[in-house]
Image (cartoon, rainbow, N blue to C red; front, side, top):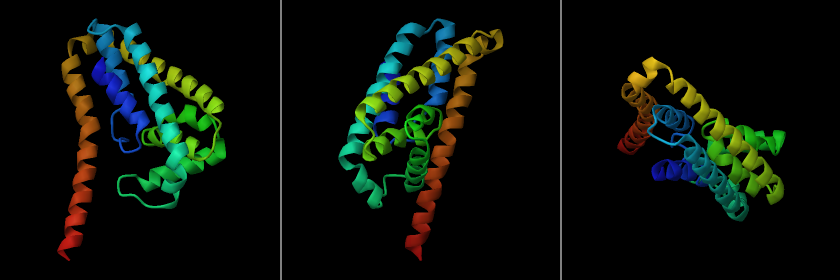
Length: 188
């Protein structure tokens, strides 16, 4: 429970962790609940708390330094994802905080952009809680119902390994690509 809490909190609280698994983690946690390995009610409550508090921390960070980050380039922030989120926020406002929960990368930047753009905390908190409820409950419940299928229940370990591999391999490949490009650039 503590590891899942920490992952969801960090992914939603800090813009430097957009690579952490969100949707797949919640879904897999739901399948573990179906096997009886975890308590679904406790899991949902903890993850909603992690998600709401993570987004709130990110909002406050955005309100303090968001305007500076929007004006400069930082190596540790995905500039393209930040700009996409900002554009989406400008078009859709508070709905961004709710809808972003289902879009990796954007999920990490939406509360930061909301804070940096001056969204009122009251409006943000409403959208934050609503988004967390929908995101956590829908994915954990989907995993729970999926995990009750006998084939899935009997082969959960293999399915989890494939799911983790599917989440980790693109991240590792992307980092290797960036590292390789940087090394080739220095070699020239």
